[in-house]
Length: 104
Image (cartoon, rainbow, N blue to C red; front, top):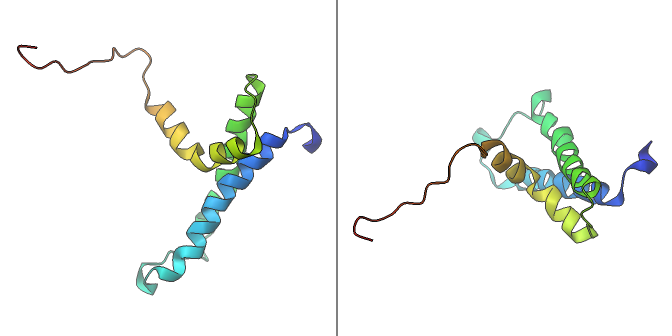
């Protein structure tokens, strides 16, 4: 089953995980009083969810016949939360309004 997953999805998973690991590495700069509780399992859910979202998004691109080189797949994985948030906020039924200045 894992062999059926395209390499682009694996690269995207790595990209998403890399962002979370960078956040973890930067906790040393955060004052102790402001650090999250690393013993709380809820904190670690993002380390599972983010790679799945990144890999899933890359898989959707590949399934849509988009050719993804490894670097593009990593970028999709890194930016998956932003891409998915933007897609969720987009309302295709809402008319785009362009502000027009009076007298223009």
